[in-house]
Image (tube, rainbow, N blue to C red):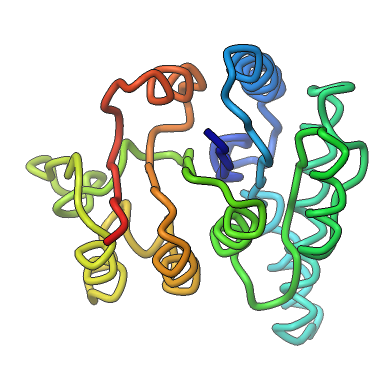
Length: 230
């Protein structure tokens, strides 16, 4: 099975922008482990997190256009990606691709491809979906800072309940809803959704603060929220 893993920048950094090097090391080891067990992790897409938001804020304060702010954010994701390459060692392709064609060329080497942002106006969730489509992955794992998709914002509503499974149409309704519940708009956008929908890619949103969840879910344990294609 071919898998793409999307790591939210928020799980790799704290609010001060400090990098959790131990978490990056653990992810690197786990990805190597599942590779030995026969799972083909074709790519890891890394988000920007606090550092990205901070530099975008700086750029905006200096009068930068939104396009330039996007470019700044993309560079932050690539910096995070290079840290991941360092942790992966020889298992990773040594350069961050800047286009989908470059992603495909890197994949052809047999190495795990580490990807950041690709172009302005595009989230790393959309990048992850496009990479999964291009490399013909069957599954996209979205590791983030919440347990999955909830009935309401679990940070505000103590009665919020995790939705263990839904189809892509129901997930679209959540993304487009005005409530913007945790596990919805903040984690996945409509462009990313359209890509996994047309490519019939399975999506699992799970808590990325526990890297071991990747191993468990690949072995069939039900963790987070599973979004099924239709």
